[in-house]
Image (cartoon, rainbow, N blue to C red; front, side, top):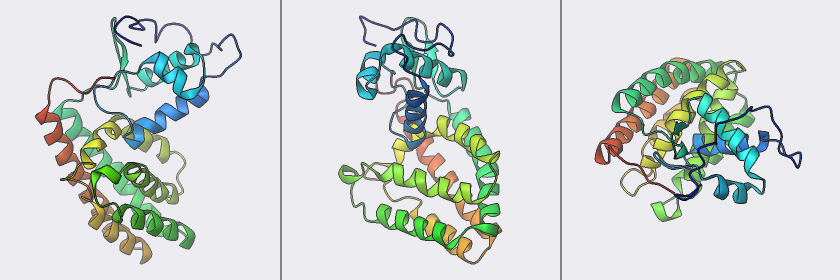
Length: 238
């Protein structure tokens, strides 16, 4: 999608349709969904159909159907004559996200403390080690992906399949704002909370784990809000 090709039909048609070449939109949908949760896209970014089709090696129709689903989930907005875009959240929305994330993700980590395995703890320590070795923003390409893996390794350890989709829906909204945590000033913020979470999980202390993860979420939300206020009207385009 470009200025000359606004892609106003991105969310038209049925999501059940298949492209003429038989391609399903499901792989594109899952890839875009993860990109949003990992913070690979930024607030205000336009989801250009042609660019995404080239990136994922597919035709335009599966991309449009994937974007349609994400608009339906509230992860993207659909703007007349401009197509799908990563929404620019309000301060109130970000603060509400913080409150809900603290409640739900805090509960998930508390449950995880009861049944996390040694193998999962080893994986968490590996991810934490990778993040702590990142010294500057220029070398932080995988930082948010490792952070995403760290959190969801814990949440899956809660052994609650119903809880994971709820947390994913929250991260679809918050993920693009995690870019605020990959700057020279913010890189590494929250890693001390990760250490406290790891210690609490290792000794099975659910309440301490909950407190540590909610502290991290609240601290990150503060940086997200400040980043939003620094540029309240427009996010980066594509």
